[in-house]
Length: 102
Image (cartoon, rainbow, N blue to C red; front, side, top):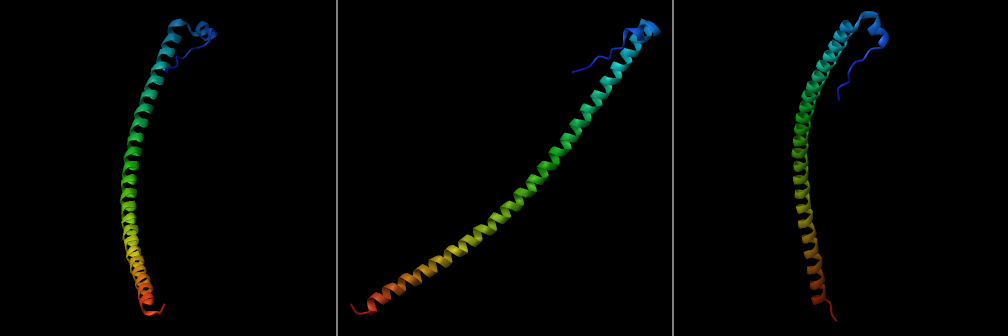
């Protein structure tokens, strides 16, 4: 939202309408130019930020997938270990049931 520069009536009386209007117009042009430059810089900075954020998210995703792969591998190892111990337990129980008198 552009802001129009205004000067006091006393300023107009002292220097005249033409000069003060020219000054006000120049101030408004300078303000508009600075706003445009600021907007461009903000767009450039946001684009840089967005690119860096996307890169970091991609790196994080890669790291997380690697860690998940390790966890999956470890879970598979633990599952195999549990199945082995379950088999030994049930085989021992069944063997004890067969060998022990009733």
